[in-house]
Image (cartoon, rainbow, N blue to C red; front, side, top):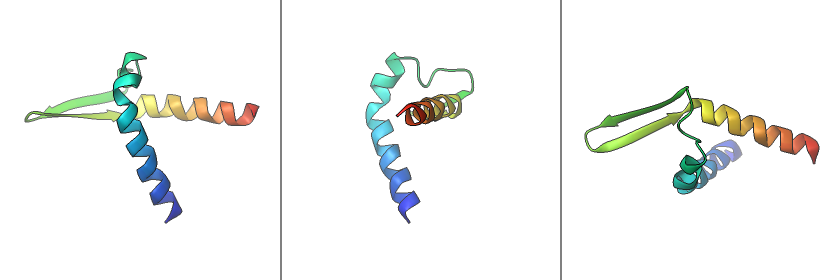
Length: 63
C-alpha cells in the first residue's frame, strides 16, 4: 500500500513539474515516447525516468 501511495505522489509531482522539466530536455530524450490520440498528447518517458532514477540514486549514495 505504501508503494502505491508513493507512486501516486511521485506521478502528481512529476506531472506538475513537466513544463519545467521539458525546458531541461527531460521528456525529449531518445527512448521517450510521445503520441497523440484525438486532441490529447500522451508521454511515456522511459529514458527520462531511467536518467532521473540514476541521478536520485547517486545523490542518495553521496549523502
